[in-house]
Image 1 (cartoon, helix red, strand yellow):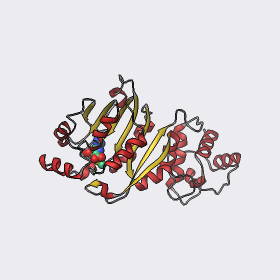
Image 2: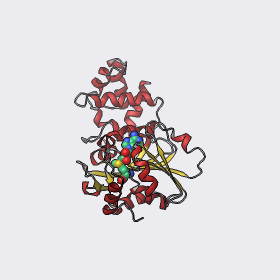
Image 3: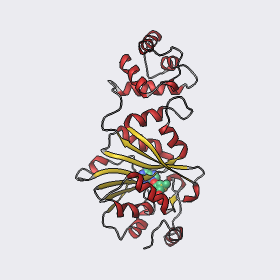
Length: 283
Ligand code: SAM
């Protein structure tokens, strides 16, 4: 079969199976082979790799992944896509399609007998980008990297450093677990149907060891959430107003003093290292 990245082939398959796009599943299928090649290159896929693809759709990127990787597990929630995938992936014997919600799947169990290097690759359904990525990171899925298409604005937030408007809890959470790299910007006309937003390919390379030392990760993330929940307030007020935290004003002022940070600083000015140090002092 000619590849689905040819829009004509995608249209034929959609018609043949009378497939109706489901907005609720964030279905925007890729129709551009160059973009898929860029994703495969950014993810650095080789025959030694086991790829977990989230949401294969009709199998457009899966066809490329099957050629580049040793093994592909493709997890798709929409059962209406299963007969299509059986057809479009029939030439590849190294792909296993799993009809499951990625948020419910036990990934460790799935790959427990695999010897290759795990890499996650996906054109993500945008309505659940953050839960999917944070789930993979927080659960310490043993993947070397996560290379995903996301909304352009979300990619900027993941990569942002202190001070700018994009910097926030997502930037810090992602950067605690992984090193982000934006590999490409992708316009709406590379998808069918076209999304209303611009997209970007971002690769997150998991750190072998976190870049900062933290005694109590949960506390650090509570401090981060507290300081960005009230962006316009000072860090100190954010922490004191947080229902998740129980520090006196004095404790927070003393901790900031110990770190040599101004009492009036806003959370958005603090680096990951400063949040880690603050949390170590308060813990
Ligand atoms: N990979 C295909 C491509 O690039 O053409 C499709 C990408 S489309 C943006 C997202 C895919 O994720 C859809 O096929 C959708 O049905 C699937 N999906 C949505 N929610 C999911 C979930 N919770 N678990 C697994 N797959 C999901």
